[in-house]
Length: 322
Image (cartoon, rainbow, N blue to C red; front, side, top):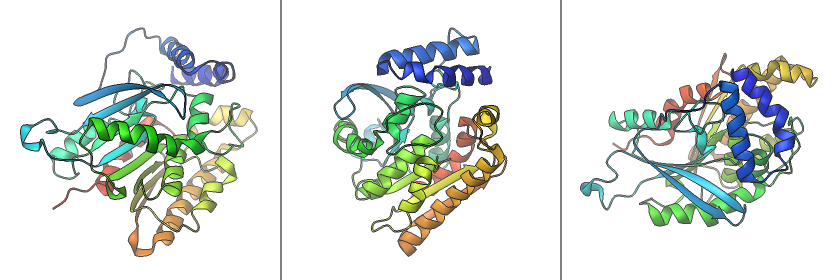
């Protein structure tokens, strides 16, 4: 059924790109539900999860934030305590299978509850920004420059996403929740196009975002432009975790072959670019930046792969203070 859902989404991307955000999201949700043969879904979200809705200005229209608060946040003993924040793109995939377009999630809430409880990770707030759809609208919002191999047509507006966060998302979260401010306590991350959006924020707004979670970055965007952009950086992030699989094309093999692309060559280039990105980041900051790179040979471009790598990522990015 996953393959059926994938084909349905790819087939309908061009049609749905002409619809507004709300209608597109609803239509794609119905398509996915049909593909999985499911009419109801049981939520898998755990912990103190808040859903916030607001109307955007830089990106006009409705937006959804999923705000996960760490264990103990509401305890009277912590009433004055402030917390680091990790902002994640594709928030619909982070905590719950029901809103996820792939009917899979990263299990951020379960992983953090366990790791914070074990004293391995500092208690943090996680804020996920939902994507408007799983196709051209999402791509337009996340990607700042054209993708030469995108399977659908979109006009990239992702160059405005850092400003959207700084002017609309961060102030909203800072007013409603007890957050620490400063680049040392502000992270941003995502996977695929979400990783490109996060990387763009780290590069263009390094005084705001100092911590990055970069999973399976689609570095073919701009024909490798983001690899080149990280060769010489005046201000580097503080900590970045870069993860990639050796079989990123595995899920899309048949579709790529039909488009005239060689999946094996794509896999090698995808992993090579991610490794080069990590090396560029290490070199750009000297001893002032900590970079973690991991390549999992059989891992594909899926939520399951990102879920598996997340615990080690977050231990590196937000280690518990001794």
